Image (cartoon, rainbow, N blue to C red; front, top):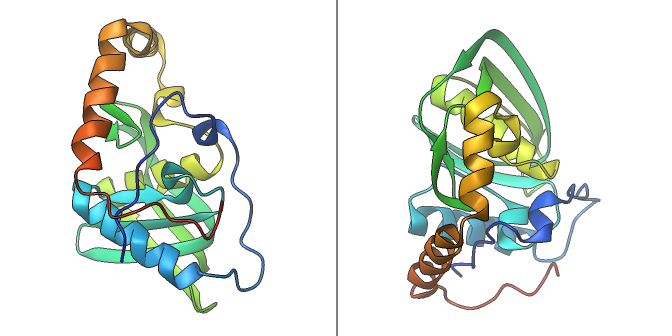
Length: 185
């Protein structure tokens, strides 16, 4: 399997809505396995296909004793609106904020074999599902920020020092990249 490079801001694929997976895509099993390997390698709890440069509606996750993947996810949210501390993103390295999320989330879709799947979560799991589906819509968690957090995130992203942090993070991750995934370009 392969550890894939993770795209970081301002890569345009992160701001582009992903396409649905139609039928059985070539190399789908390999892509999902490579996404798991990549997510595990960097210690992430979730990873969306656009984060590895693939514009398809797929995400993997491993959070609070649930590990899985969802293709063409449909998200349903409920419960209270909460602000959990310290949300971050592999594609926005070094920044952590508190976006508003729903306390509960259920995601349905299919697995890589076309079988229906459904996952439900609260807390960090709910936040993860919402975060990953946002990626598939071309949205980053920082887009959900308001007030001073929104201003602060924009200011930090424009700062030349942030460019150095992002470059350093990509260089650190590059040491474990196996090769570039080519099946879904």
